[in-house]
Image 1 (tube, rainbow, N blue to C red):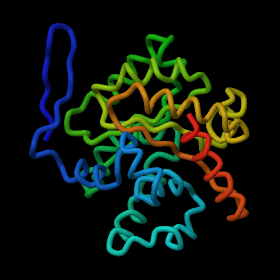
Image 2 (image 1 turned 90 degrees about the vertical axis):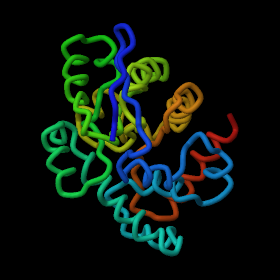
Image 3 (image 1 turned 135 degrees about the vertical axis):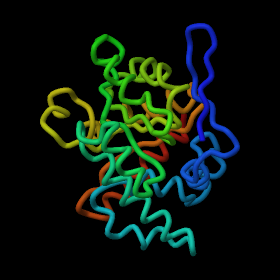
Image 4 (image 1 turned 180 degrees about the vertical axis):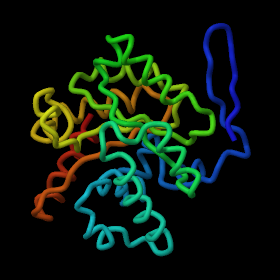
Length: 232
């Protein structure tokens, strides 16, 4: 259950003790605020960040977590289904999914720069996340400027339950705008985008990245990204 708290001109969503199961499940995945859990072991959340991709067929080889495995793997598939598209999964479709048991949904990909600078675009996003029953909800952003991303994320920090950075979009619009999967060649920029949100937001931060056809290359890349993050 989610309650609405209004103070002055601001409206914030407050989770209650009877929050839906999705909140509990999300917490079990782990929070990026807990570095001890994430970066000192193969925690569920750590693997979740890696395998929110289409090429997750070898995920069970890594997710050897006993009875947690089935839940995480199902969540990975669900995550991939519910936010790979850019514009399809808006409020009406998310509510339909929730009606049939989906515990956690993602917004369509939000262009951070447009959200910050274009009023009609910003208005549409706020309308899309306005339903109190559409919780827990993760705001999915694309960006290539850390400061712009942080500003956009701050505007939604009290209105969603987590922030997800899209490093997976392969479409031509992402190529032209230099975001999504086309940032995977710039691991330093990916590091800065993740770190600025991690350090300045009070809600969890996740990232969707792609895996390569070569599994070994994917592992090396992932640990390289991990090293960049820890170094900071």
